[in-house]
Image 1 (tube, rainbow, N blue to C red):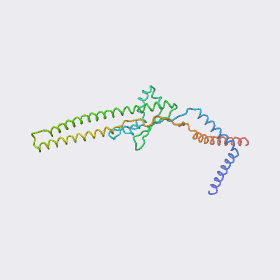
Image 2 (cartoon, rainbow, N blue to C red):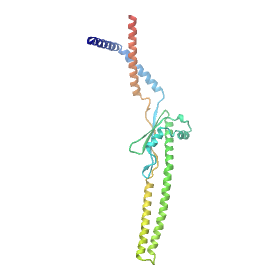
Image 3 (cartoon, rainbow, N blue to C red):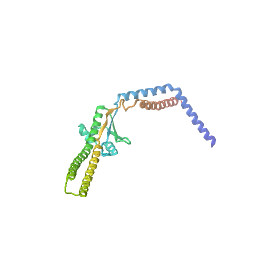
Length: 261
């Protein structure tokens, strides 16, 4: 049993050595096939359409220190093509003409990177601009409503504060009141003035903490095509040429051997 196993192993090793010898004998033929394959695939890839990556970055606006919309939600909407209809409507094109748009949330920031692989760079920039503009308009409605509310509230509290200050001044000049009564009234009015001032300060802080959603990086394209990548093509073509060349050589060797039998 052991001798039979060794015999089969030796036979397999002998066959492998023969294959290697065959390949070495026809190494120039194999090299030629590899070079021809690389050249042919390289030419075809350069003649075919080139794909460029267009990218933009937007910053999510904030209301009182909180994001208008969670970045993860916006990324999900973009990747699910939720904005496709509005973008197509803005550009007066069909939704099917739009490329696949990808979005990625940049960790620990309010930034979202949006990209698309396109053949026409200008068209890709228009698409990303339309998408970014649509998101900004949606957020602007919410931000503007909050800003208007805060501004009206500040004006209202400022008016109340002015009335309270006038009452405080009249109280100081009033007569016919005991000092204790006047003190209590003045203290109450002053507390009201301070409370209104605190509300005004809080609203102003909230108003200043309101930031619009905006484009941080205008749509730009990659300096070189993202696809096809020539180094990758050369490697893959070389591997394919090697496998194809080995196959041709072994088939040819088998054919020559069969004719001599």
